Image 1 (cartoon, rainbow, N blue to C red):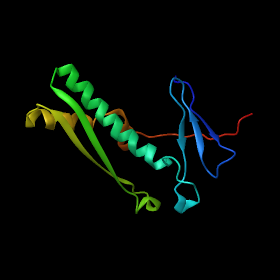
Image 2: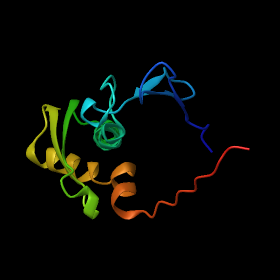
Image 3: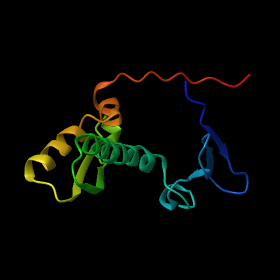
Length: 136
């Protein structure tokens, strides 16, 4: 089991949170000004969306490395459509560019493989159970 992620409100800020992850520099989360925050850091939706983009890129890179394909890098753009989120529909469009001397078949395969990344599967096929409780 992975170590816990700790989120702590910053007392001198409106909604800004500090996130502690073992082995990583602290991250910060805030709320956009339109929702009463300071807009000083990515909001929770940004982290949700970027998790998908990063996982797709890493998955494609790992596959290309195993196949010894000349993938030099991956660029990912995640476009969010949250207009129907309150009705249970949250749409993400992922646009990927595979950099390097790859043919069309390799690029198509990398796109296909990226759809099998763990976060894509988690977001689309898993049942996520969340338990919330107060600390003793």
